[in-house]
Length: 141
Ligand SMILES: [Zn+2]
Image 1 (cartoon, rainbow, N blue to C red):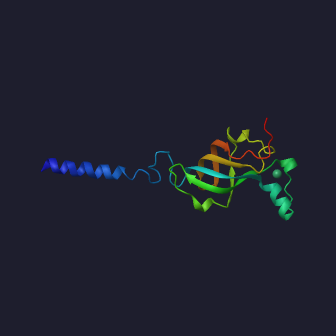
Image 2: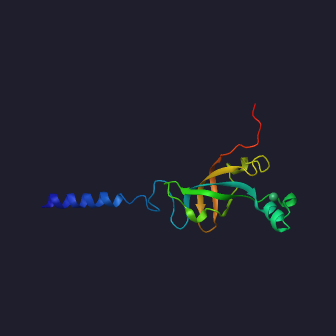
Image 3: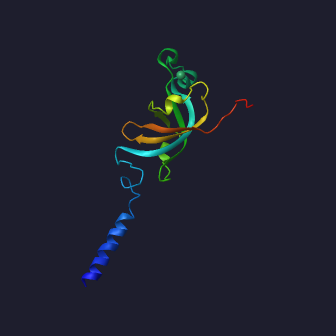
């Protein structure tokens, strides 16, 4: 009888660990209510320049620098689950070693994928990796 009980306990523990893909228990060290490891793909643009062109905003990028962000077209967490709520939104990113390599002129309008922590309270992503997906309009060779 003790033997059977210990099997039941073992099975219960095994099924509990099957829920490890839930927030906080996923293998990517996401922290519920803090951040989630996220891949966000979208078009790189400057919010200041865009608002100036579209609505006559007084943003002064020449003095203050461009406010780079992406217009999200695709977004999922590291477990592959789509984050539909971010699609179509403007997503700002923190200056990191990866994003500081983005040339705002050369890469303007290109599709990029930013991967890293998405902070829920700030609504920004902290990319540890940046991939330029499209490489348009550039002459090769
Ligand atoms: Zn700008």
